[in-house]
Image (cartoon, rainbow, N blue to C red):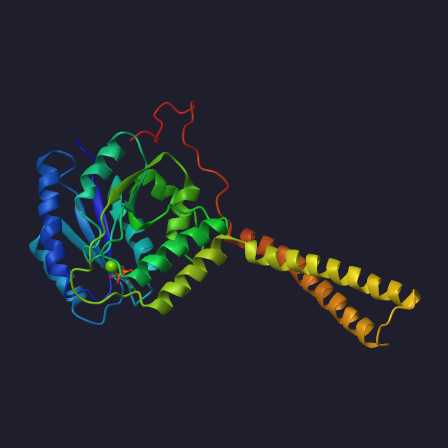
Length: 323
Ligand code: UDP
Ligand code: MG
């Protein structure tokens, strides 16, 4: 018996694309089921993220007409990442393996076959990675790729050019449930969970219809969230720059004092005042940085992230770790 696959899709005002997405995914599911790659109980689960248009009515209608389609509805708009979590954690109750993707058909659904193949080979997470961004505007390409580079420079473990098109096994989602943080940046969390993973490349196409629900402002917020949820480097930067500045100010102060004693030609009063301002200013920055270090420790503790996840345990015969 093959595994039950759930495809979870967050939808916010997606009435223009939902019919086409359903048509194409129905065909895909039918093929996968008849090829015996997934169980006939497999489904597509739409998550209505507080849409203001007819999205939910359409999801209800699709559910009535198609046996392999279902849906959940959030009480209000909570944003893409939260909608995705709602979908992943709900689908986990019924599925052995879950794939998340967008509603607008930008993610190539033909990559699903390869994802499943790699899953049956024993991988728990398969990241969908964009092989090229030919269809993206120059601006989107530069900002998006710059974002991934900046993130890894900041010490956040992210998969380059991977968004939220990914396959996860049930045991990964069980572990994921232990991450209780409210500021969500999913693509940073899954690499943290671990287990064997692989990558599937696909070409990202244009949005099938409608407009992007991710305007620049939301994108910047998202990037800021990603960095501050995973990295304490910005705080360390304050402490380090304060330390370096106070070192230079101190040397400068010494220089002024020595040249004063050696009878150098300083305008009396000015240099020493400036040097003292610099010195105390930079000492204060350094002290703020030190306080920041403690705050960052408190921050990491409050997240209470799990410290490990077991992959195998030889004491347990019927290890739940094998699929
Ligand atoms: N989305 C959502 N809630 C929101 C914004 C977006 O559920 O508040 C969904 C949206 O319906 C889509 C996915 O998130 O399925 C990605 O959004 P979009 O395609 O607009 O982003 P882009 O591809 O332009 O980055
Ligand atoms: Mg999109």
